[in-house]
Image 1 (cartoon, rainbow over the protein chains, first blue to last red):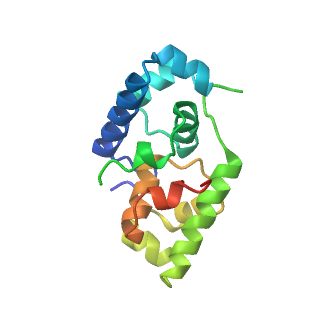
Image 2: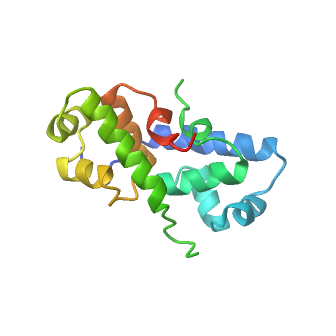
Image 3: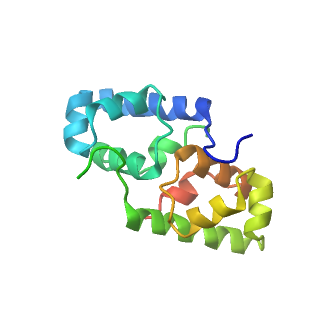
Length: 78
Length: 78
């Protein structure tokens, strides 16, 4: 396993799906989440589609925008 | 705020400290955590010192190695 940029694709997909579920549960668009989080709409899309190996800073920013704890986005295996 | 690589330094420092606390609580070295997680010892050091804007894949890898939920590393504000 390369030690540089470790990536857990199945985990990223679960986190991405959790973000979509919470966002849609609030009835907000990716554009609105971008506005609330200050992240670019394309970044939001890539994170939701698990194309990005998101940093925890970004995930915290999304959690803050969705008004949830970071754990609600990242504890997806339990 | 630049939209490319968003970084929350104070958050990263809290997560880094939490990893040190849990690792030392288990009485294991950075080298041992590197062995358990498959991440490079230098990466472990950089994450603990908040020099890296760690990806959630890496944080999950560390959580798995420390046998804790990811939330125990990332819910540091609550």
